[in-house]
Length: 92
Image 1 (cartoon, one colour):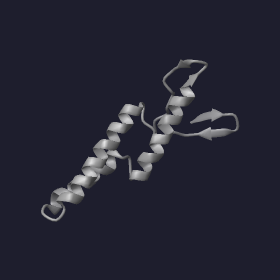
Image 2 (cartoon, helix red, strand yellow):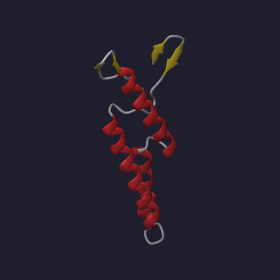
Image 3 (cartoon, one colour):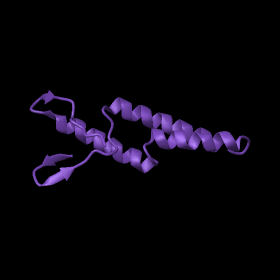
């Protein structure tokens, strides 16, 4: 948890980098779309892909979107005074 003045912020869904977050989103979207497309013929495989999608997205698509904004905010907060540093992120 970071302290910025009086506001405490957490980055529960953020990734270490934007590239990592976008890769997780792509993997989750592909798994979710494939699950829906193959469901009529291969329901077992479709159900097996749902946990893969949820794991990649860290929950639902909304959780992934929140994580995208947290990742971007962490990247912007780390770049101050013309210097960029990797944001500190607590893992729980």
